[in-house]
Each structure stands twice: as C-alpha cells, then as structure tokens.
Amino acid sequence: MAAVVLSVLAMTGQSAAAASSATPLTTPDIASAKCTAADVWLKVTGSTGVHCYTGKGSLVVDLPGVDRFQVIGAHSGSIGSSGHVFVFSGAGTREISPPITVIEITINT
Image (cartoon, rainbow, N blue to C red; front, side, top):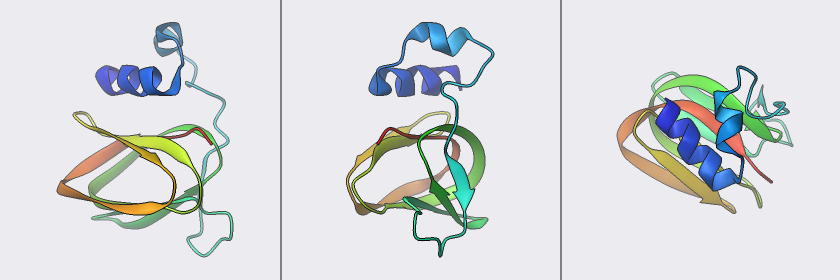
C-alpha cells in the first residue's frame, strides 16, 4: 500500500513527508454518496455493487472486484490498488481487466 500512496502522492504533488505521517493525506472532504445524488462525481463498480463518491481529498476504501469506474463531470484524481494506480481527468468510463481491489480514491478537482 505504501507504494500506491507514494505513487498517488507523486501524481497529486504532495510531499513524501505527508506519507510518513499518521494523519490522513488530506483532510477528506470526499465521502460516500447515494448514486442518485446530483453531486456524485465518481461511480466505482465492483463485486459488492456500485459505490458513489463526492467531494475532494483522499479516502481509504476496500472495494473488491472493481472492473469499471465512471467519472462524471470535469474532475481529476486517481483510484489505486496494491499494484495499480488509474489516473483520471475529465468525464468518462474506464474498464479494468482483470478486476482489482481498490484501496484508495483521490480527487483533486
């Protein structure tokens, strides 16, 4: 997980010192939301269903079997697993094969 965190930090412009801190990467404003909410910016589909998020910051999650994510609107950020980081910018849907377990979601804008 440390490699994913450092990769995400490098992409988001945060320092490596922040990774060694026991506090979260950012004060998370990111939160789980109802998928029908008007302010949802990310939908992640996995073996446990569709999970929707809104806000800005970083959030540690445990989403197994993720094979797709959809960005709604002009947002940038990343989703990461223990071996992969998928960076996104702008609206669109991305398929992931083989499926991964997402352990962190970061939204920058």
